[in-house]
Length: 605
Image (cartoon, one colour):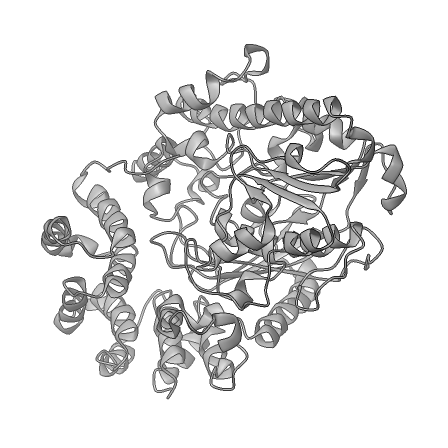
């Protein structure tokens, strides 16, 4: 597994500029998937599904990073291989996004460390080994300073594999300048270094005489770790390179053939766990969400794939996506934020600062500015014809029938699964450590229908949605009222009567409703009551509510009116030892935006 990489940056997927000879060789002798998707667009939610076989929107593991427990019966799937006599090893990243990660690691792996591999197994023992390569991770490709990239990537990459700044084509949503090319070259060289290290593992497999009876999987943990990719609910975030190589002994296990075969059969990461167990002739647990696409328990592809993208670090977000035959429909429930959201880890990167500065200076074309603009409520892309997703088909009459079908399919999946992340992380934290979001989702007390009644309008900017959102501020369900308030944040304008109606609900008994309504009201007319609410929670002791105010300020037009309070908060955070790491990062980015205060570098790989 490599990190943060879209198919467009791999040689066997058509990019001749990148140097990936080892991955390409696996593809030429195996099967390359043209329709493979991560179940999330950030590492930890994706890896939670990979290891458990369960979708993040059922377990509550969709927000990067969170620490909710999962039920004891949900195991890391290598546990079942261990029970069947396999030696299992992980080298070495876990990042399973749950407070039960330690249990998952202990149960799943005979060894999980930087030195783990099949070489510690007993003679003749079958094995399952995972190797994670961080060289293409976002830290290398955009976030760390250039001198760290030189040390972590360029100094380790043979000169013959290095990609120069002018050796490749720029994606159409990036401005083609020498400065941007310097940054994008980091992606190419990070991928090339990961491939070089994959070659070293392949050499060791050959040296140990295991190539003739080992099946090899290659994939990335999600899409590209650059602006518009990572943390975005479109193909740039979801779609991954995926290759399976079969030795002669096991070529019969491929239903498509081998030797450079390309299949368009759609798969996602929930399919990995059942597929591996199927190849090992191990029974597949009923709670798995995916299907085996190889082995004795293979099932045919389903008509639709359902995947999700939620919050990341200090940014609240919720996207839900359905895919059918490379046609991708995404529903954004918080589209007031742009694709390049104000996340500390992202904004620190030089490429992000180049984009922000060029956007503020009016130097970006309409195609290039898309990264900085508020999103729509829904998008439809044909990833076969439009891999960079520059042509939204949601308003194209020719796709009206497909759009309606995918809307209905997505809504049915959301409702049938009782998607627990619509309950919001703020509420899920109240469950504590003794009750899991997965189990709560199945209780009668979780009134998902009331929540969905309000959430289904969030993001749409039309009169009907706005009227329903104002009406639903009277809902007896507090989370439904919150979704009504979240939805109002995306509405572009309000008349005087609507403002009075919203003001009537400003002091809702549920603090998150107050915060979202206050941010909307203050932008409308500098309401003193709204300012009072925002200042109250900004200076409060609840880190989640502080972060919620900061999140809302990022997407307010009048955020500059709160500079004095933000500076005071920074001083306060410097003297108090509270659990406010995400809030601190969000505050740093706000001060960077408002008063050009330098961002601090604290933790990078």
